[in-house]
Length: 193
Length: 190
Image (tube, rainbow over all chains, first blue to last red; front, side, top):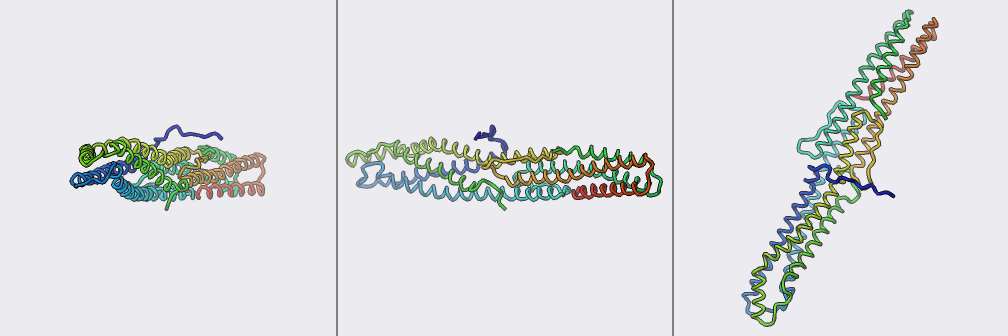
């Protein structure tokens, strides 16, 4: 099976930068805080040893290992909590605009081209909302043109009907109907699939 | 209100981020011990001197070790989140492209995603938009083709000098098909 690798990974720079920055920031804060906590606790321990009358420890491990483990465990537990909160809050930020856009897409699929696709200014995926609204507007424009041609077609059909029922059929009426059909076909041909 | 993502996306993101930090913490802890002499020396005075020497450089050694270990860890976290954010940003980009195609009148609706991509449900919905409008426009085109044939037939009947029932029947068919066109278009509210 051929694996299709993407060539470009940094595709929505603004969104991806903000996504990455949250986690880079908490990892940086974690590293700094752990170093400071470790340094503070180890320094305190060494100061205690310096001012004591006897030194029981023979190695640096004996002296500092409990402090190291305590500092790492505490900082990792705090990091785990902050990471969970960050991911949850990120999801809470991403879900509502996507849910709203899905509802708008379903509405467009149902035939409603009147209402704009938009999000609150502070929500994510503004670009996507703009593109979906352009899609709605593009469809609306084409359908409006088609409806205008349909009105002309209906008028031509009514004229043909009236003249035939009045017993005054004319060759110009089927011809004008055919012309209306051709114009409407041209309007419909902007859609392709 | 969640959006469709790879199964356990956020759990995997959590576990991998925490994994990187855990490995970093372990290496940094080991690095601090590695940077100091293992033993404190024999006797009280030697041990005190060793403790004093460690105390003097403690902060900078710890800061250096955490900086040296922290930078690759943070880089790894940045790369991991670049990939994970791309699993949302990539599909969003593809959906935008597909929306632009639909706006141009391309109703082929062939958007497909990789199994690990998010927003597959939104892609399906966009394919549904293309499919729905394809159906409606397709119906209009079919009715127009029929009306075209019928109007030509009516023109032929008139040229042949026919009137009465044949003309009325042809007219009725045309009228009905024009109504079908109107009905198909009225399903799309503009």
